[in-house]
Amino acid sequence: WDLGAAAVGATIYWGSDDARRELVEISEAFAMAHEMGMATFLWCYLRNSAFKKDGVDHHSSADTTGQANHLGVTIEADIVKQKLPTQNGGFTAINFAKTHKLVYEKLVTVNKRGGGMGLISGRKTFQRPMNEGVELFHAIQDVFLNKEVTVA
Image (cartoon, rainbow, N blue to C red; front, top):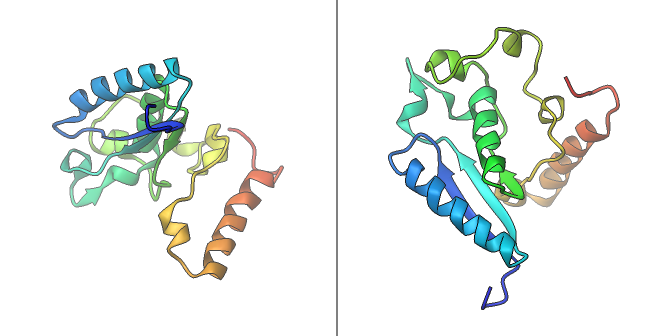
């Protein structure tokens, strides 16, 4: 705040040995930032061995990343950054939480279908050649503008 910053950003590596400490410290920092009128950004990542089972890494499963996002907004992150899901079934594979089979049978991994209001596309887009980056942005935009893709 004293340096003129408009926002506070942090990362929580859910499931890691430090996740509880990170959760408490970042939650307190976000509350203080909001008191000063600052925005908050949270990177909600699951990159650790807690999400690996039988040779499959569930750090990018739709259900586990969705839960991480839920926890991020629970501590009042204004914007949550998450990897797009590449698979599903993390809850059942790692016995992470109870869920209903319809989650896997009826819902899909598209952010908009899950109630998402937008996506942050970061360095993975900007590190590409300009034409590829623009193409990726257009593909993301097309999903959110497509009226046939509805909230589940």
